Structures are given as structure tokens and as C-alpha cells.
Length: 104
Image (cartoon, rainbow, N blue to C red; front, side, top):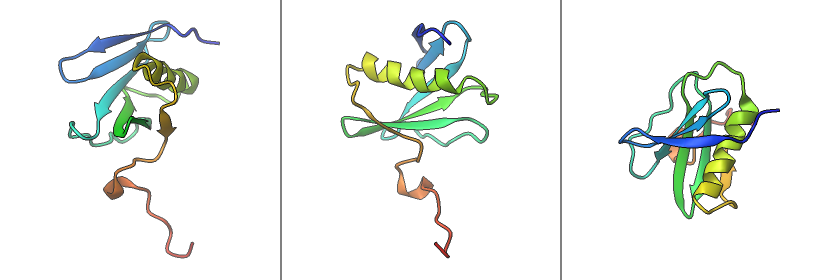
């Protein structure tokens, strides 16, 4: 089980959540203000912060530490003083929604 030791780095453009124990990094993007394009091969989680959507994208994700990433998003929601943040894995922007198969 991993610790819940997270901290924020600010790289002048956005917040970066770092898990102290593993070094896992999660970049935070504001979908209304940043030109966010999902990076292939990274894990993406989206959160509704009082009507403004955030994108959480891993940095150098190798398929490990999924629980750490989930907890990082929850930690950030508490950091924003909004622990009831709505969180989902589908991009809320219409142009990025998963396409449905025509037979379904």
C-alpha cells in the first residue's frame, strides 16, 4: 500500500501533482484555459471543479501505480477544498468523446 504523501510543483504553466514515494507525476490542465490535447499512452482522468473541467494526465506512465494516480486526483480535489468533485475517465469535451459503434 502506498502512502498519501503528495505535493505540488508549479511549472509556470500548470500544477503538477507528485507522489513523494514513487515519483509518479500527474499534470493538471484547465480545459477552458489550456490547449489540452491528450497524449497517447498516458492515463487521463477528468474532474468537474464547480463547472470548470480539469484534465489530469500522467507523465511517463508505464501502466503501474494506478491507485497512486487515482489517489492523486482525490488529493487534488481536497486541496481545492472540493472533495465532492465529479470525476470521470471520459473527456467531457464533445470533440473528444468516445465514438459509439454504429451497431450499438
